[in-house]
Length: 213
Image: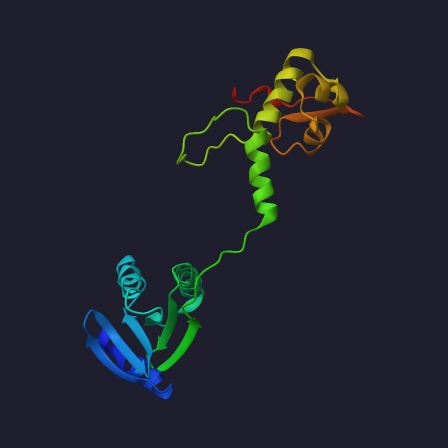
């Protein structure tokens, strides 16, 4: 496959929209002109950093910049294509796919200014985790072994049970300052706790062998 294989379908697609189309004009792979309406398309046989850099550079010429790549194959190809389309949207780039067997060109995104939608629940969760986490126990870029506020709370509960033995949830909550101690011991996501009797919890075998936090 060559980039030049993409040009005839893209040219025909733009001409159907009323553009006069020429290739390799200045730094641009494809240029379409319809009155004062200027469109630039960068052609590549696949998404790459080079493609995105070239397309972003063309935004100095016009806001109407597209990238055109071959149509994906299979579910994995679609997932990758979809992710790259999302990235292009963030960069204000349009996306075209070309089905080479019949020249079908599909528009997946038009170049428009990107305004990310903020998620209040996600922001709230992040802010809550930041506020609850004691100190800064993790190294940036960690290998996946992360100390969360939840694990810090669990460690405080386990340390109390280690020292005082099986205890009522309300007593543990008051002594450790972990408001939801009873719920955490009942849910037992880390496997550290064991229910001794109604409302009373102690350490499980895993809890006794837990790593020191």
